Length: 400
Image 1 (cartoon, helix red, strand yellow):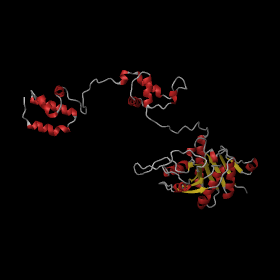
Image 2 (tube, rainbow, N blue to C red):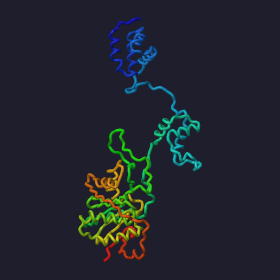
Image 3 (tube, rainbow, N blue to C red):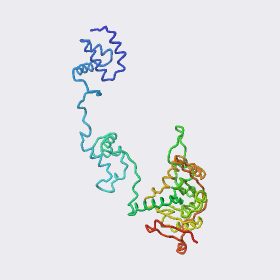
Image 4 (cartoon, rainbow, N blue to C red):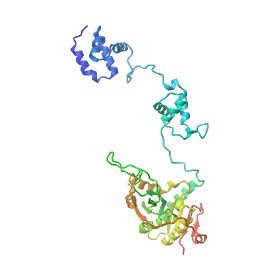
């Protein structure tokens, strides 16, 4: 049977390209049913759908309409892999678990557990699965790709919180009396040269900065030791860039440099200088050279120096870390530290929205390691320990 209906052909020509596939079946079926006998073949020739597809769609028109938003009627479909092999989930979780029973020397414990490696191990156990399905199952079980989180700093000292409160009281009292309060520490040493510096900068696409492929420090590679001093009262930073070794003599000399360049301009004749420092390193509380050199500094400034050390494992609470060093790292991210001048300029240019100002100087002085302080020299130090943790909290007075 032939149909002479130009409107139908024009409708399919105009509207058909804009219809999603499920709606195309329904429209074709509706028109075929309207035309009656021979309509299926006629509409099939116009729209391109097969006669079988249109015939099935005509039967669907007699059923209940689909729920809003559904494109297809629910059907049994192929069973999922988990339904067919329930044990495969348990096998995957066993592989990725950190604590696996059995031989502690098993290679699997020391293998990067990527989805492809897990897939191969499952195949060895008789399971057929793709690596994408492994990833899907892991996500369903609450697993995600995660890096390490630096948080474990060992067991807390029994007096950890008490020392924090002691330092807090010390700083508050010193601020009321306008005593200079500085937080000090040595920043991570930096290689000088065209080496990779972590971080990214805005550059033209596909034009990265070319740096050396390796950063193994040889004896001929210069190294920068930034020692930072942060003034809590005035939001001012001072960094002394050492070119030799990070020793106690270097640490105290850096504080002396802060006093020469910054401190004495703000504090004319202070009665007391408050220093907060870490427990270890060049300014550690057990370091005799640190205390001996502080005695010389007390004589130079002619004031009492009050030192409070943060408990072991709490270096990140020291204000110089997050008030000064963190912003220096942000300012020079992605910038190779090709020479000392670059380091000094980048640090000096560090600012914050709160008004941080930083002064940076270069220290070419030689600081020999291994120097010892004798008992006779220690006896010359007028050191008075605090009633609370005198090993962490003490005052050094100038010699009269």
